Image 1 (cartoon, helix red, strand yellow):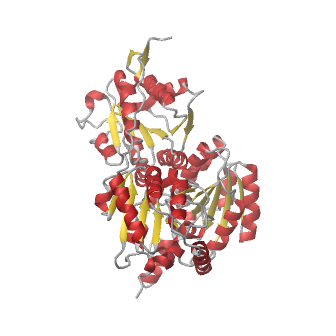
Image 2 (spheres, helix red, strand yellow):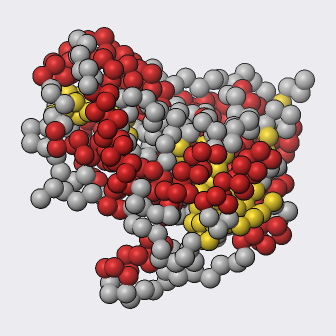
Image 3 (cartoon, one colour):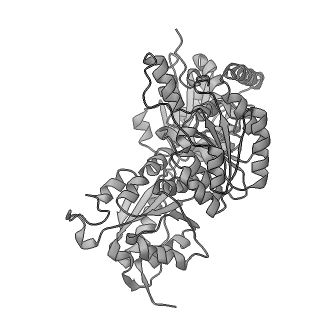
Length: 541
């Protein structure tokens, strides 16, 4: 065995040691030595080259969001890093462990402003503004320790993205081969029994508690359901928490149904959630409302101060709280929750044609399949109109709401979950942001089904301009290619569905084939019912 190795080789070896089996990205001059090192471990790390740096970042995000494992990508410094910045923003907002590996200019030129290829004034500062942690490797001996430290921070507490850079000349510099350290994430905070006792007292005094879950509760579904059953409370969620407790669980309330119950709620138990739904979208609180929060991030208790703060892992906190409260007998609770859900379903079924198409996708997509939303009329309606039956199965961009993330993210989801069906739902505007990645899907046989709803517009903008600005529209109508012909030009099985029944047949066929597919669904411009009365309901008079 060679007793020496380059920085790039040590970094690649450390990726393998940390169980990272896929790297998305584009090769480039600053990274040639790292790219060559990835070639050396190609039997253990799959390299998927993309057609744009943003695509690489989003695919890594899809990998991370759908698994909870690190999604890694590599891009050149400067413009490559900036092109992938939207994906890092998304990973930060969604608490996803996405790892960016990039280069920099020659080490002796950093900070001098000499105008070197791909130079940024301070790239490390830029990366630190987009991630939880970003560090530089200046010598081969640092490769393993720096990667271990960055991964340890990414996976500690509230998870999030991280970044590593190394100067152009450092990746190829060699040093003695050494044992590589493993990341050591910090342990979760110990559950405070006093806080649990205080929370239990609030629950005992509450008449109508409501549990709200977010993406921080992905691993706590069974514990949350057990707490709900013990105290006779419903569980609801917005987009990030969809599937933590399945929609068909008898204690789950669709958030449209939860809003109908909201005037009676006197206690909210937030678990792994920012409580965005209650405090930013519902926009009013019932008088005397009490708040319990279980969150691993102590700073959340400062951003939105609860009556009782339980700083803990979501599962451990929910288990401790369940053990501390007495069982509450509410024999008619489940019937009431079912009635609220049925009434909500009847009301939001007016959002057409979105709900009709979403019903078809839900019927055809296997229960354990993945649905990747997009910032579109279909994606907005899916947040309340698409049932989800398991954590991570509904992939969203969280609060960033960045147009164009969907299809690229779905490719990463499929790479991470090759045995599962993955459906990407986009509008024509968002899909065109990453349409070039159809080539990536073909080259690497990534069997995502892209369903593109074509209304020839940025539909939300067009509606807002029409309704709020006297019909003065600017920049909101679009000219598109023939999506079916475009898909076929890439070698992708492509078709057009002009009705829900036609989509049902095309989608079933595409999922069965498990190969890249594109289905265009034409929608008359401006015909979609607005979903916003359900997403931002008006406060009661």
